[in-house]
Image (tube, rainbow, N blue to C red; front, side, top):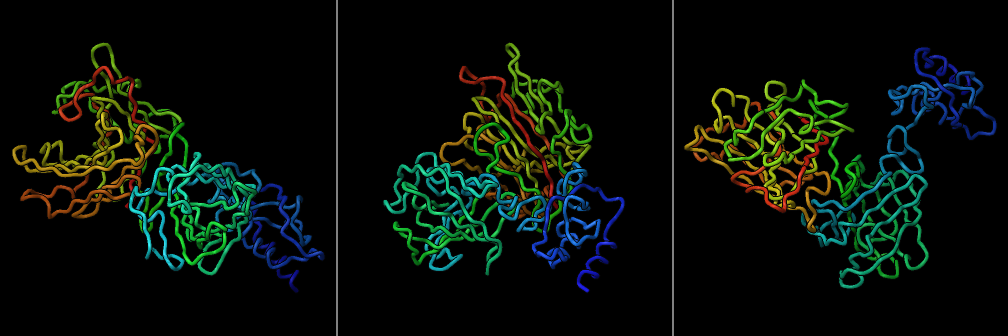
Length: 497
C-alpha cells in the first residue's frame, strides 16, 4: 500500500512543461528500494526529483522538475538544486550555502556580549566601534569542505593575558555542522587542532569550541557559545557574537554589504547598475560650471569620461583638465521620486584635499520654489581631507534668510578610509522623522519638532542627486597633494517601503 500511494503522488506531480534533466541524487537508503518517507517528501517538491520510470528509486534515469531551484531561471537544463539545512535552495546539508564565505565582527553595538547565561549581556556589551583593532581585522571563512579558515592578521586580543594584543598563528581547523537544536538553528563544533592552535575560536579566545547559530541571513551571522578557560575546559560564562559578511567586489578593503530585504518592508525601486549604460529612465544630469552656490570649480558634464556603468557599478569621475576640472552631477528629478522609506546607497568614496562627494535628495517642488524651501536630505557628504568621516545633514527654511540646518557625522574605526572599501549609507525616512545610518549604525535623527519655527518639508516626495564637487567653501580647494582622477563608485541605490 505504501508503494501504491507514493506512485500515485508521482503520476500527479509530473508536469510536462517543467525543465528536465538527469538527477544523480539518490535519496533511498532502504535495501528493498521501496519509496521511504524521505522519498515522499522529495515527490512533494522538497528535493524536486521525480521518479519518472516509477521503479521506486531516483537515479540517473529519472528527471527533475524543481522550478523553484535557485539555478532554474538562469539555466533550466542544470541538474536540480535542493533545500539545505536552512531551507536555502542550492546549498549542501554538510555546509549550508548561507554560511559559506567570509565573516568578521560587526562594528555595531553588541557585537560581543557576555553574561552568566546564554544570550545574557549582564556583564558586557561592546559599544559601536568599541572593540580593539586586532578584533575587527579577524576574518573567518567557512568552506564547503567543512573547514574553517582563520585570518587573524598575526595577532589577537588574548583574554588570558589581560586582554593584551598577542601574536597568534592559527590558520584553520575543521568543523562539524549539525542542523537544529533546542533554541538554535544549528551548532558548529570546531575540532581541536594541534599546537600552537589547541583552542581555535571565533570572536574571543575564552569562548569554547561548540557554537550555536542563533540567526543567519545573507549578511549577518549571530552565534552563542559557552566560555572556557585557558585549558579549554568549560567555564560559567556565555558569549554572543554578531558577525557580518565580508565581500570583496571592490578589489580591496573590507566591504559592507547592502541588504536585499528588511522585515515588514518591500523593495519598491532600485538601480543595480547592470549592463553597460546609465539607465535614462532613472537618471539625467545637471550641467555647467556655475559654482553651484558654493564657489565650486568643476564643470559638470554628461560625458562618459565623467559617468559610466560597467561590471555592475556606476562610476562618477572627477578629472583635472589642464587648469580646470570636470565631474558629473546625476539626478533622478522628473524620473524617480519617493515619499518615505529606507534608502540604501552602497558606495566607495574618493578622497583628497578639495574633493567633495555627496549622495543626497531634494524635494520635488525644487523647480517651483527653489532651495531651501524644498528641503534637502544629505544622505552622505564627505570632505576629502577627512577621508574617514562622513556627514548626514538636513536643510530647510521658507526662504534664504531663514535657512536652517542640522546634522552629525560618523567615523570609521582604526584609521580606515571610505576610499578603501564599499560602505552603506542610509536614511530611515518616515513621516515626521528621519534617522541617518552608516553601515546600519544609526548616528543622527531629526524630527518635525526641530524646525525652529520653519515649515517641515520632509513629508513630501524627494528625488536623488549623486555628484563629486571639486572645491567649494566647505571642503576648500585642491592643492599639490590632490591626485586626479578621483572616483565615487556606486554599487546600488535601493528604496524599501
